[in-house]
Image (cartoon, rainbow over all chains, first blue to last red; front, side, top):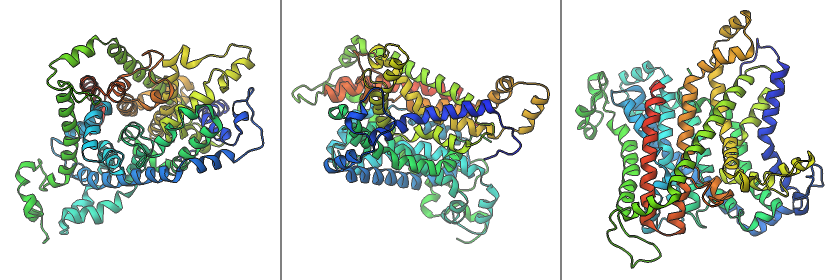
Length: 274
Length: 311
């Protein structure tokens, strides 16, 4: 990130660090509470220094099938993202390199399907899933997440591909490459950073999606969002255990996000930044 | 494939059929097979459930009692419009979306400008700043509800007592504000990230020139940085609105729409009708209302916001 040539402003530094620490504090507090005993977790005034315990984690692993939930989250997020990319890349390629008068409207229409509130179609989707035996199956969630991320995927990929010099694609076509060859041998290597950003965002959105997973999964296909929600009612009083479960659900995607944030930033702007 | 542009129009016999229909102005490539999968899937995804919702909304249909069936006419809608929860849920939805947008865009813009300065540990601070974006809504709602906002054992209550104040029972006294706080915390990183990226493309010399002319930080923020962020702010508003219209998990976990109906937004109202009351007919009618509302918002957004995007 750019920094040289800029002066050091103590006031800005203080505001920035204060904001950063405040924003991160709830997550820090959650992780801290997960190493407390139940008594320490509800103690007032709150304790910052204590003898950490792993009791909550061993408890959770003994009672809930964490690997099943985590496995579901991974399979569903990756599956939905992979299928979405396979469908979105060709569409974004066509729109970016061979735009027609309708391209803009098509893109806006795609994005507008994202505005249909999930609740508006919850009943039919629920009934279709029930009738096809897909209720509480990973396939149902994969398909739904794939479809709900498709518009954003096409849009982001379109933004990236448009920045790829058209001449390179044209040249490959003149050399006799078919459309699919151009996509495979020219666009994919060149557009890899954009495709990666799109995939990252899609994985994060899938991982954290709560509406469909809470309503369409019960046990077999339940991802970590459902795992956490199952701790909300009866376990609400056991804060240390709740914090440990929340930490287990958050840490994988948080680490993933930290490592990929630079890549992610480039993609999130949807072409608003030139 | 044998070279030459002339053959490019027909990449395969199957696609050739569509060529004339889809040929763009200067394009000589059939793009239909490339775009069609996305378009067809999204058409199905948006039209089939929509049609079913519309159909169910005119039926008597209760999952608990299969004996009740048949054509319902407008009665599901009449029932819905007589329900005071509907208007209230519409207002809650609009307040929620509006308040979160204002908070995240305002703080996001200011913090993006602050982070443009050079200071020690800038990279680490930025990572901490955006972390809430990666936390799933159910988790953030649970942390805020229990560890922070709990009226007896929560951290905020402890701080209030430490300052000699009476602890606030967040979800009992200001339930909607509490939910707005949680959701704003989740979405501020998104606004911050995009606006920060936008500022990085601002020409450093412009700021330098303003500085030489004696402009202060606040003047530069108002007259240079904010205008520069215009398009990025449009993106933030558009994407956030899409997600905020369907806020569900935060309400589900914290207040379950209560106390009473003060935190029931449209999404939660339909959920209650459909899955708690098993009344498919009336839930579908509410779904149709939600879809109409979303379309009004969509038209508005596309008109004002998306037009600013260079597509």
